[in-house]
Amino acid sequence: MLRSLYSGISGLRAHQTMLDVTGNNIANVNTQGFKASSVQFEDTLSQMTKGASGPQGGNGGTNPAQVGLGVQVAGIATNFTQGSSQTTGKNTDMMISGDGFFISKQGTETLYTRSGSLSQDPQGRLVTPDGAIVQGWMAGPNGTITGGPVRDMVLSTATLAPAAATTKATVGGNLPGDAAVPTTLVKPFQVYDATGNASTVNLTFTHTAAGSWNVSDGAGGTATLNFANGQPTAGSSKSMTIGGVAVDLSTVTGFTGMSTVTANSVDGGTAGTLQSFSLAKDGTIMGAFSNGSKQAVGRIALANFTNPEGLEKAGSSSYRTSANSGTANVGTAGAGGLGTLLGGQLEMSNVDLSQEFTNLIVAQRGFQANARTITTSDQILQELIDLKR
Image (cartoon, rainbow, N blue to C red):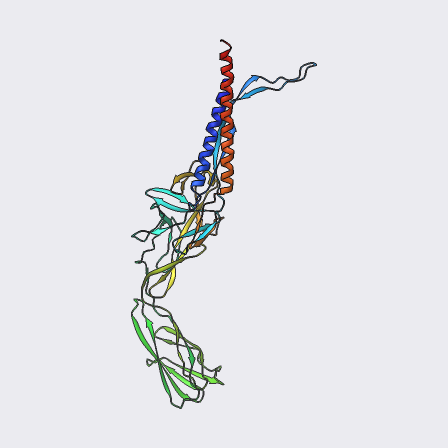
């Protein structure tokens, strides 16, 4: 009789745990990156009342007779399926599409999270809502990312794009083929040295004969442009060099009536500070700088585990490694089984409310049934006591 009482108590405890887990899932239905959990039950040790026996002579064997002693929680599993996406348009909001976790550092502890609701602290570091610093690889001065150990991701406005010397320029447009001889056109364009100092180079175009123009920089650099029916001929110069700058002249034409020749593009420039950034699918953060240049400033690192369900919840939608999760496999988004990154979006909770409300009913009925087992056992005990009257 006492066995049924204790079995009922174990059932109450187990279904109370199921109610607790289900209630936590429902409470986090709108938590970014939250992963729902589910309770797994198993029976406890059974008491042997009669052992099994094998066949002997003309008698057959008998099966063991065992009385179960109740139920217990075998484990609480986390469901790591993908949650739905929510577009925010905020450039520091990031979503992992596929497997993987963001890596963050809180003090000396390394944590992992699916929540990509990030912001910047006063030092420009990318941080989670609880202040953990997101980890990745920072780019060098020329925008190259070499990998190695992960470090704090810093996107400060003090980040510089270094000055670059001008090495090439493209001159295009049209020289008027009907201009008088000798017509002279002077077209200036700006070039930069290695420290970002700007200077002006003047290209002088002189109409020397019908369909022929001479190009000079005034410092000994010359080229000849020859045209037939407005198009460059085989004898026309395609380029020239001005103070170490290669000037491409291949697109200049010589039709009548138009004088539009100009420098279309010139590389190099002054140093610039970071103005804004965007996220690529592989986690590369592309910075836009005040000097007009765009280059990589860093790359967000992702981690995955052999057994993600073995991770231990650390609060604030974060996880820490455990003895059964395995070590973190750190890599680039989109490679090695890791998902890709989407900017301006957040992963929402994967809680299925219809399933959770069903679980509430199941847990409630299981709790009621076990409570009935206890009351029934109590009534039978009362009958036994009443025999003494």
